[in-house]
Image (cartoon, rainbow over all chains, first blue to last red; front, side, top):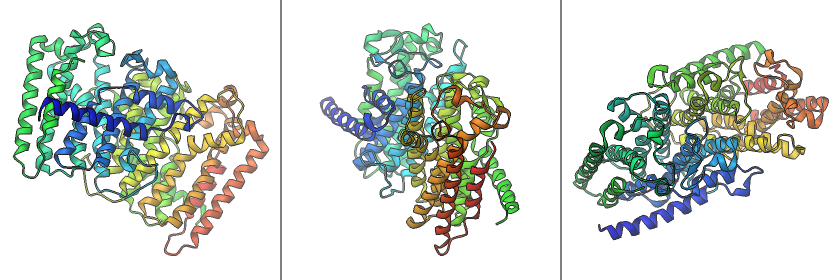
Length: 307
Length: 307
């Protein structure tokens, strides 16, 4: 598949997830409080939507249906959005700028931001069970819905994303080994990226064999994502990133760059990209699947991105 | 069923949910951070466990199996516990005392308390899908697991508990009509109490007819719970409540007592108790169900409690 086709695919899928997110979020006037507005602001204010794209690209390999993929794509992005809202709060990273805009607590106050994050997490599980496009009443069950909830809950919870964030906070200003740094990032960002891929595969009722290969792909992409994040925090400016650059160094946070150096970090990102490609090459040999073109392009996009 | 039998039942079920909560929470040493300890502290530090008791009592009417009820009982209590952790934080109610102990952010710091609440919410959905007693790997699916997740997500989210909390915050110091107050509490506390009953019924695969009656019961109990809370905030002392008494009046928060007066609030609580009993009387007429003795006693306990 050409780069041009991937761009067209990305544009189409980004439009699709944006419409699904808009549909599943509560209308601003649905409550006598600014909570729905804060939820919408925190989700619809842009973002690369990497996780939804991974859901769609993985699901397509198994010809999963779009309604299921929309729900999974929204759910994982809602979790990502809630984590950003809470991470930005004064008691955490105390960030005032996100995607070039005031963070949720700056715009709506801390209490509403806290509640918006909480409500976005609940909405993620609601959408997985009731769909992104329907009113919140129970409709026909698919057997894998509870599997999707389990994958997302484990990935975002105390041994996943929230756990990684806690390890991060506990280690600011402390030396970390590469093993510790890798464990932290596997939880903090890797778990949700991996969950995105696995949820897409689950929507397509992928075989265990295929899931194992996709997990290899996702683990490589997950680490690569963080390595490149660390590189960009050193090399890009705040305007390009849409958030405050150089914060890790300023906060004396251990990163791949501080641990491995810039050259080795860049080489490592390339090596992970190759690992991801290799897992997809093996996936190609399983009969009856669609070629994972977009997963391959997404791995490239994640490693080669500039923001 | 006698009061003595109810006390024995309560003791047995409280022991059961305590063991299930202990089993589903991560071990304190499972992460290189104090997040698991903060999660355990926030859940295992006591509490009346009203919501788990409602789950068990409702499930028993339909002979639901204990493993499913344990998962539902844990899940709803984990959601309740996370909401208390976040509500107590400085940007919300700024409470330092909960169940006679320092609140989570006082004990562990705000960042860890925030993450502990987030992780407890995720754990609730994990437990619903994977069970309270098993390691987090997928086991056999029951068709209603996604229904349980949907009920809990809707009840705790932006149009439920979190929404009620947002309305509460938006109205501190403002006059509220009875309609507004009722709507706020229906979301803030009623939704999760109702979800407890409905999740128990769902574990027992209750008929729609039975669910309708249980919803009537749960709505009455949910309002009664809040009316009694408001009464106790005026009449009990902090030591009895295990939290700061008189806070609502001090914060100029609208309550049933400030709106209806003490005498009418007390009469209203009794009226709601009667409504709950009536719904159960109708339930008794459906064939093949076990008598809802414990639901009746729980309604009495909620109205007649002193803390």
